Image (cartoon, rainbow, N blue to C red; front, side, top):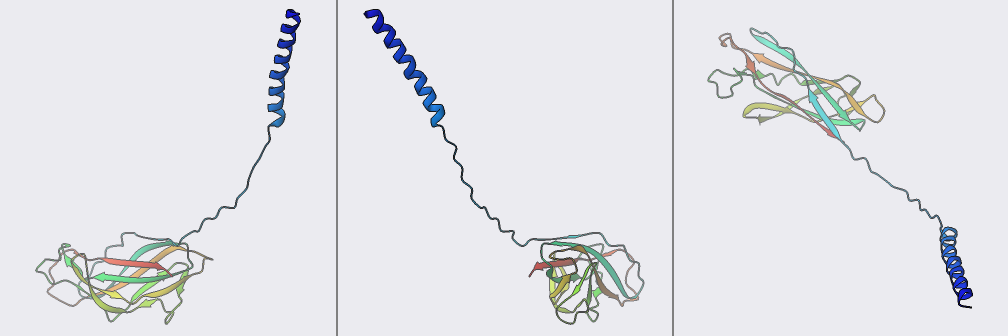
Amino acid sequence: MLKLSRTLMVLLLSLTFVGFITADLLAEEVASATKKVRVRVLPNIGVGASTPEPVEVQTGKFQIRVPFRIAANSQFVKIQIAATKLYKADDPASPTPPIDVYTDRPAFVLPANGNESGGSGDNKLAWVREITLDDREGYETEVGTFESSQPGIFNQDVDVIVTWIQANNDQPVGDYVGLVKMTAMIM
């Protein structure tokens, strides 16, 4: 009888063990959930510049075309230009008189694929105030609104043309250096 009880007990334990394994396999369920996620793309803008071609001048008015690039995820941008006087040897402390920005002529802003959409629509920004930029005297334009012909973005080259006037027949020979700054803003 003891042998039968042992056999019965081993058999019962084996069935119980197999039952737990089988129950675990059969009881395993798969569950999942799905949820929408959302991201908000914020306005962003970047401005870069290339080195303009050097200009040679004796006297009179002259223009320099400064190449910029704007990359914005908006079709409309606001643009403002600042330009400084040109200082001999790139030294604002030089005793040599600087060459002045010719503020009677506006700055021209020429997007490759767009135009000024506000104001007069002529791509001209008038000089409106004196400023200091990196220890250099200069001027700043009004702010203009420009629209890209690219749908939904403003990603293009934008040339800026600034005029200076060298009115001094006795201006010492040498290299004169100034700054042109473009500020672009998302609307």
